[in-house]
Image 1 (cartoon, helix red, strand yellow):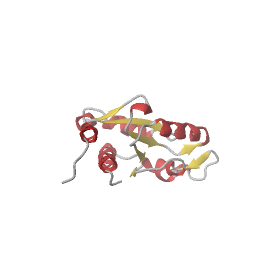
Image 2 (image 1 turned 90 degrees about the horizontal axis):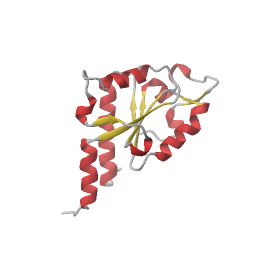
Image 3 (image 1 turned 135 degrees about the vertical axis):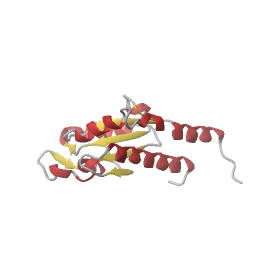
Length: 152
């Protein structure tokens, strides 16, 4: 039987109970942002799963990115990604973040999020339902568990 480090066990158990999410809108129509807020309302109550929005990327475990990446947001998104401590997971929410959606080949658009930073979980839809966003965050929890256990 493999012995584990007690500190790693504490990290793993805390990530299972409280996942802190930082939301970044890189330039979209705000439809996904409204659905993210809907997921936090009492109807869906994402906080019962330990999902909580935080105000700083330095406190986050997950980056929740909406919208296609515009030229002004390119460097900002890179900086936010670098400020987020490891291990981290990036979730691309909506069609714009995944494929550039209706803004594909627009003059000010550099492309989807995965052109700038690595994406771990994609949540499709325009805009995606709150249930889909919560499901994406649950998949992010599994990805973080794998990273902490050294399997990712």
